Length: 317
Picture (cartoon, rainbow, N blue to C red):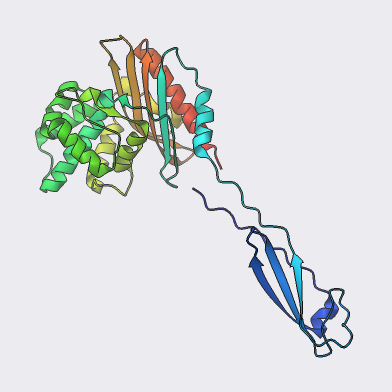
């Protein structure tokens, strides 16, 4: 949150005669209510000087004058969560669908989240799987094997499920993912049972935390590991370059999307996470959705939410 700007103190005008006759000492302070005041202590060999500038007859005491100035005004802190909520309220929501979004400014570290519900990750968990694999490799002091690298490339760039399942087993499935996420700082994410990695539960806020591990400098992952994941997320195949990239307005992006039709309802989970650049500034964006009747409807909702979230967040002073 930005620091309030200090108010400017106005100097009280002094009569030129007082400057020649007196030695004036200004003492500044702030009242309990926040009002700035200035006390002028005037001393004269002939006696004290009144506030009008005339000597007080026969007086030799020190006169304290209190000159009141306008209270220092502090601008109200920007409520980015309120701005994000207002922007998201304008998104056309399909009947029965739900969406949550979160944005973080990488330069300032300020963030805002809309919605706190947990969603199925679908394939966005593949970023988490790779981050976990890299963390485990770092701990073991080793590089990824050629096979692991091949799986990682297919898992992120083309969202290959078989590769994700292979690496899911390598990391120790849900228990391995959960252990790494605890170190990453994710608080509301839990791995899917068995081989159902796509049913890992997460929140938009947690996805910002994960993205900070990939794109931020304060990370459990080393620089080489972060660069590796970022590079794969910049090269997702053409038909998967939708989602939070819609908020980049033609600028650079790096992302991973997820989509999953639920067998019990026939409705879709559609998610998108990544980094976007807007007007030269880098932002992390996560949008999670569920309940649309088709993947296309889910993509449209996620992209509308990403653009609305960025418009509400990036436009704040």
